[in-house]
Image (cartoon, rainbow, N blue to C red):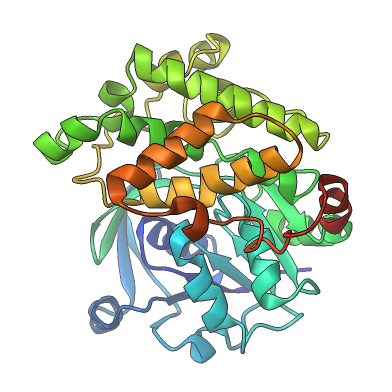
Length: 361
């Protein structure tokens, strides 16, 4: 399948990076945003996005920018969702009336359980792919520009249903050549390494974040050796839960290396602290200005919650993961287990873990 017309959903850091990247590589790109302000700014400036970083500096002109979903999906062959996890349900509900079986939905990223959540809302007969993390490390400098410090990441991509992996993966790979094929969406779900260091980093630095309003380097200064120890323990639980579903995973440092976000030295140390110290692409990124941030909401709701739910269903103890979910809920006065991508939202409620393995195919 040769892809030409692409719709990018979401005008955040990842959406701008994807829209610029794909336009530069010759695809016809429409960018959708719910924000009237963002649409207006881009429309009034010829739908141009300025970019800097790994691609050098320049500007590119998108095919269209719109906040009308029907218009955004008209003629689209691939729909790329670059949306924080808590926003998935809103976007999926909005595209449902216009999404067709001729289209491929690529959730970049799907975080954990994203494709299963999408199938539960859209229907399990559609072609859905998800990556374990975003293909870019990027930050918007304004509503007209984006800085990209890393792209072409070898993200892990799972397909739902898995029996359509060959055709769907080939189509997505024609757009993102560096992606790696996962066995199924359970593998891509458990490969969500952002959920391994964002929640510990935010929770264990909560006071520093609130006192300084995030004026420190989150990955380089916030993931200290002791915080890294928690990440390592959390990662062990992730790997054990995946093993219960027949999936063998590399550790956190290896995942970060495969994503192009740490050095070989950082990977070979088998230490989250060392991997973060060696992460050149992430060193410049500051901490969130407050706790009301996607590192909290997204990586708990669309990271730890689905992993924990799947782990417990398979009989795996998840004490560190569960403690982080509970502590985050206490800090934010939220029921993350209820709000997150739980078994019900993944369409798995009432299924045994063996049934789940069959279901994903």
